[in-house]
Length: 184
Image (cartoon, rainbow, N blue to C red):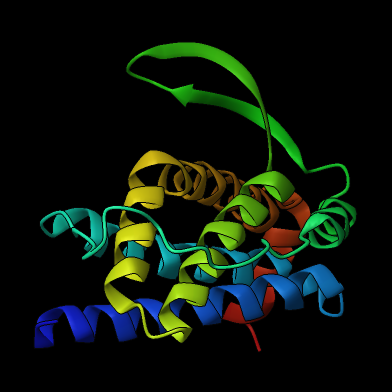
């Protein structure tokens, strides 16, 4: 494994761990005022990770089959917790594939965030078992085939929600705040 691949594997693993930690913190619901900004940061960071993987040449694992990494983690409790955190905001209008299937559908932030977490956790199992090329292959493949699109959709929704929270303020309250700021 070249030094470039090793560095990319280590950076990707760190980004995956941070995303999983952050999503679990969001799901705990302990900081509701920070939910949207923290989700925006987590999705932006993991989208950058995926973009790096999408931009490099195809990662080809040594073996032509994926070693069994054991059972997938049980993520339904995380999905349910996120659905509770995003209650009333979880569903959004989605277009799964704007090129081949432009029909609108219903998306769910909780599903998107957990789909990303599942793919990243799967790659981390390979990484932590010392199969770094396999981890890179999995993250790259799953980014291009699924979680990259889900991350982009979720990022757009979180951005829109945050923009509404911050910009859809009462005009009188904004005027009062501006007056107070200009006349201490």
